[in-house]
Image 1 (cartoon, rainbow, N blue to C red):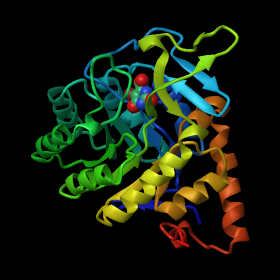
Image 2 (cartoon, rainbow, N blue to C red; image 1 turned 45 degrees about the horizontal axis):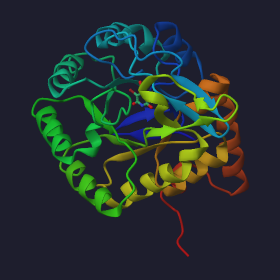
Image 3 (cartoon, helix red, strand yellow; image 1 turned 90 degrees about the horizontal axis):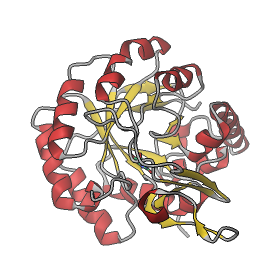
Length: 308
Ligand code: RRO
């Protein structure tokens, strides 16, 4: 009932973790393997190990979260090394790549191309938290050049993780670029970059890096995430699947993303706060709402949002 397929690869359900949430260490990835997440998505990886930004760098907020992690990760070689063990779970293994430069991205993607136990690359074009580095996805020329260089050699199934867009002209410009490449999927959205939360009691910011500015996730971003999924569903070639992320807490939230055109969804803030049991709970809630509405499979729901 909840199975989905992305570029010929079967997923036992449409629910998986979002990159960044509890997926940095070997133990966290093994736990994802044992959970009901239908895939294992790694933390965004860079050429070398990174400690990330200063603490505190993540804070739960009343309706979501703010983070400025700064890509703490083990370095891409470790996520390659873990692949054969992680594949024993039989789930797709998706390695997120967020090189600090175009040449870093190309080098990492080249190496992953020869690793058969990695099913997909999720190329992150949207990390908002590296000081002095703009989000690649907001620079359309740089995005196009990176994808051109990647697909000169890339044979691995590859998707891109996008920042949120807010303007119809920007959606059209980005979609025109993405449609030129054999992408397996787009994941939208990454956190809304450079939000600010104020703690009234201490009269201060709540995270240390970048003067308190950080990526906003959770309920705050759900309408923006749904809008991005919907717009890209309208504009992208039908062979590019859409993975929705942003503020999913319940099965009803997933149902909304499916209606807007997502073939799968990823869970970030809720997974951080609730742990791996969230996948089973949300799966059960989704099954319940599909039953109530007499849907047999999620394919009957995907993209069927009605206009009034
Ligand atoms: O590590 C981070 O600071 C981070 C990344 Br790579 C990302 O893509 N999105 C985010 O909210 N934080």
